Length: 193
Image (tube, rainbow, N blue to C red; front, side, top):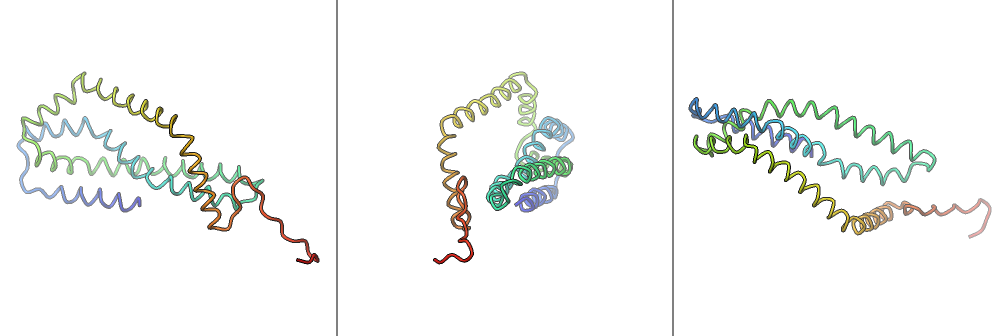
């Protein structure tokens, strides 16, 4: 999953860098300014998307497999797994942000040059640099947090219940005991069935 997303991003970067005509110096300056304003947000968003995308599925599989670990070792194993995931994200974030930082300028220059006139770029840069844009950006972040909080408050218990049902179903398919239940005891040797 990670390599597919990264491959797509890199392919787009390479394809976009083969534009035949270069923008005028004035248009190039506007594009450079817009890239400067956006680069950090693009790097953060894309890095988060690429690295975090496959993690929920991986963690869910890990939690299911964790049920096979002896009960007295589960907590330590879970903490070690979480530490590995955190280390993976931290180590690969820097690496991926570097790759993105190198791909953004050529990719964005080609895209913006193709899609926007010099006048449109001037307007976009003016908007991006305006106090209103910054205020709107902050309000958008607050809106996302507020909506997420409200949705999780209302839907959280339902989703938790559904997730537990899914885990129980998966455990059943795997022949594992359901979470919270004790595995059936093996018959004592020498007893008749």
